[in-house]
Image (cartoon, rainbow, N blue to C red; front, side):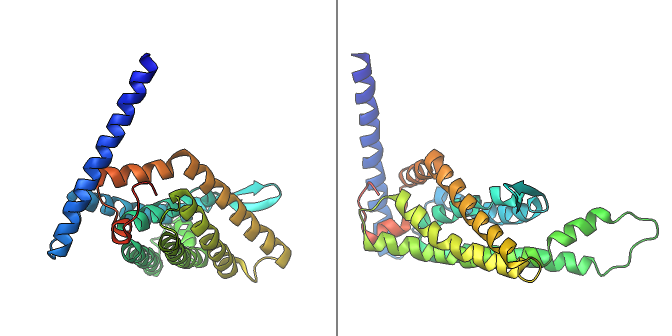
Length: 260
């Protein structure tokens, strides 16, 4: 008896949240027709948070990549555990704010990451002070060289592909599930990321067989990690944010059902 009452309360709260979300969306749609600001304040805060997170994760992942570990006989950098978070933020951006905003955030993240690399290169031009230990700087500067730039190029290409595929899947099948949109878009995006990054970073430095092993390992392990993240929290987080904010720019424009 108690279990039935608890279930009823949960169903009631869920339906109440859905009705509130529909009212907020209708209000936003009316403001959009009048040419007024269409983004709630909380959504603006979320956009700032996700955009900042994408830049931090991109740079932190490249610093973590300085650690090379043994992945079943294949040298793999530790950054591979953090790069999937970029796809998480990218999927949330394209789902909540739409493809144009997600593409803009990806471009700006890549630009500022390259600016950080340029700053490190410029700082390296100054002469060393006699007796000063600049080994820490040299390690960080090494992390913003060829591999870092290859990582940024792979990130930008994969994010644009991810956003495009995610958006097209949503348009082609409006009843599709977020989980499938996310993973299918990542399957295509990670292919571009792995091939472009591995080619720019290691082509000519590694034997072809090692190059292919490393590329395949990066692709497979990255996809496995993203599947784990998706099962644990990504889908729940996306739907929670949509209902909490009453804002889902792509979904609102496409007139999607309440259950994506």
